[in-house]
Image 1 (cartoon, one colour):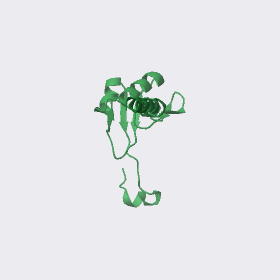
Image 2 (cartoon, rainbow, N blue to C red):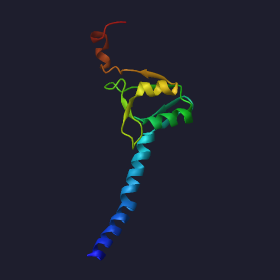
Image 3 (cartoon, one colour):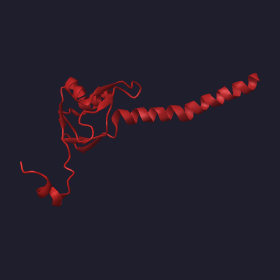
Image 4 (cartoon, rainbow, N blue to C red):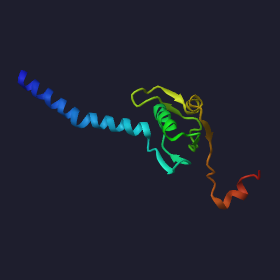
Length: 122
C-alpha cells in the first residue's frame, strides 16, 4: 500500500507541475493584462477588464492620462485587485487613485435610419 500511495503522489505532483500550474499562470497573466494592445502608440490602447494591478502597470508603462469605459451595461464596474485576491474596487476609484481621468461613454445603439425619428435633437 505504501508504494501505490507514493506512485499516486508522484503522478499527482507531475500532473500539477505539467498541467495545473501552467494553466493557473496563463490565467493570471491573461487577467492581469486582459488583451492590452496598442492601437496607436502614444495615443490609444485597448483592453478588456484589467485587474487593479494591471491598471497600475498599464498606467505606469504607457503613461496613460485617460481611461474610457465603453461598457454600456457597466458604467462603473468593480474590478478585482489581482487574479489571486478576488476583492473588488470601483474602476472609477482605481483611476482616481492613479491620477487618471475616467470617462464613461454610452454607445448609441439606434440604427442610423431611426436616429432622426427616435432621438430628440440636442
